[in-house]
Length: 112
Image (cartoon, rainbow, N blue to C red; front, side):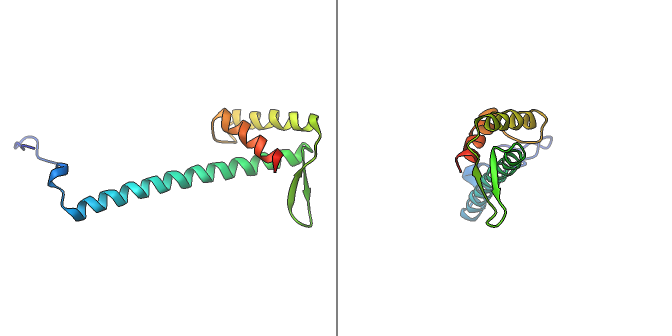
């Protein structure tokens, strides 16, 4: 890269990087990928928690107080209400994600 006095060189070309700088770039890229993966997992866990809470509220899910385990109540009307309330919470911005992720998470929660 040719530098002029008006436009100084702000970065090195890839061919100019030494091995240590190259490793640092790879590490930074891996770190970015890890933070994206962590964000994805956190968003999913949040969706599961909120939808589970809604499911308990609408009686689609039953919480066993002694074991803290949640199971499906097998009540179709309550399951329909869970889908409706989950999508309403999503529309209100209380749950992050795409519509398909909300649908899949409701299914996941009902199947657990």
